[in-house]
Image (cartoon, rainbow, N blue to C red):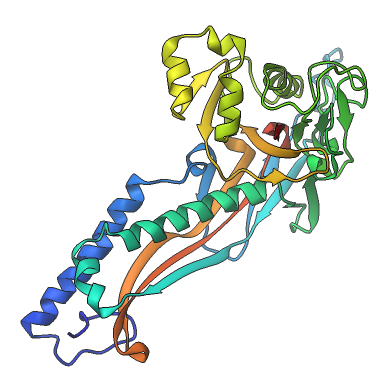
Length: 358
């Protein structure tokens, strides 16, 4: 069986026979089927963050900060006022990811005549998981900032003590109108940190006075992180926060009185793991969230954010192809490729809630 005309790196002296045309149709069918499958099955996290295309090795995205406060104009024929507005950048690179599989000859017909087969679905699912992992790793990772992207800003929770009862706020986004300082329920990180992290033992009271320990997802934590983002003037009163949770946090939610007493449709949607909005939060189920292992307890890092918190750049969207490898007895080869990266953009809305999982 020959290759379809134009396949990568191969020539075909029998391209005019009917058998080859049939095979070409199979290959075209595979590619069309893959495109359809990809459009119907997105990653869990990507739809809730910003995505940009990227064609160069590095791409910079500008961040425009706050303008200075207006002053009263009391003079006549004064010079025009001039104030500085902080302007910095975030640098995104691109990383290549790939996955391949040889298809045994006896499985050839089943694979090529059904583009939605198990091989395609399994490899597509792997690609979707990789997209989510890229987002999560960079959400909590180091962001490259500065004119050339040479300065590093880390996530504030990276140095958080296990079982913290405070809300940690990065010093890079402490706020200006009502700045966060260390004291009460807050601990302020260094100037090279950003993010908002609610400790696993936070119960809404000042550090040292908490009465509960080893807590999962609670109402106090949900209120605390929302109030902090509002204090930083990062969200409005009607902003819906996206909260990415595992099945364990869904169990915690279903034990909160306000949810128990809520509308049946809300309880049913949460219990089934469906995306639902409640109390200003949109809950999205994913099992990819990182788990920090500690001596006291394991803490799940629940992401709480808005779309502008992170930007994903895509050089080559997840795509699949198939060809025959002449170095492997001319057997078909399935190949999937992804070229992408991501960066945390605004720490004020890049939050997390640490939830104990026993």
